Image (cartoon, rainbow, N blue to C red; front, side, top):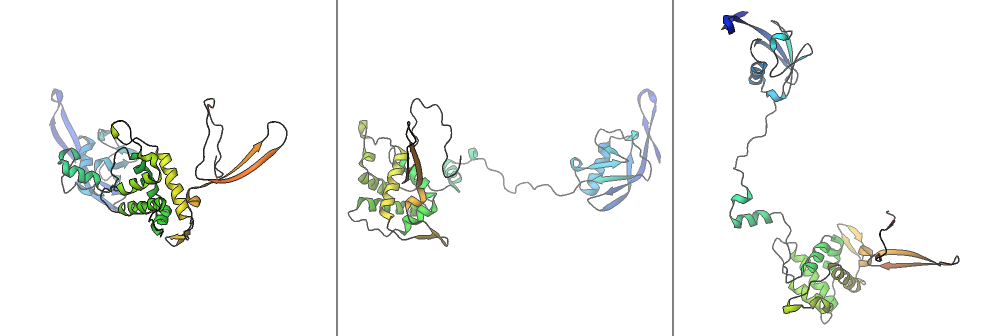
Length: 297
């Protein structure tokens, strides 16, 4: 059907062809018959009509006619369109995500107390800093991430009366137990046991403030104490699996070294179990060519 649409520039009549076409919707598995299309209008008008009929948003639509694509801005009068033509529509009418039912709250818009609760939600409990004790707190948090170690400490039946090393193991067990909760833990009992075993951690600087200490030294001393106290403990089980019963098995390194004489062919091999692998780097050492540990390069 041909309709008169009015007059255009210079009084020329603009004639628009409006005729029905069929639209084969692939995803919808159906054909829409008698869909009017106006070749004088922008293709966006027709695509909007398909949106209302199928629920497929225009940005998801792919409409084809004899290899030609119909999209916003396309001049429909230049396409092979005629009454009864069959167009192909590809696109899903899946609903878009719904808007949140509750207004989104940004952390800057809530009270300080609510901010603290939001920030702490899902965060593991921390340890109070008792005065430059971050070295100890970080060591305890690291050891807590080794379930076999925590289980070994928890299973320890060592009596700590008069034994400073056993007291250290017992206080560690208490800290790990408290860290299973959700509140901040005060590790003052463990700190006192640590200082009794290793007085260097009780050193104070100017003004009587506790001095900063080395976390690696703290870790080494704690593991050494646990190794001594637990070396006679029985084997433990974690989730039905038999685990090592010594700290050496968990953290130790088996080292095999070969000493070769600078002159001659004499050599000497030595094997040892150590708790840490020390790499000696002098001022003249600019790089390490390669280090192989446990078979890894």
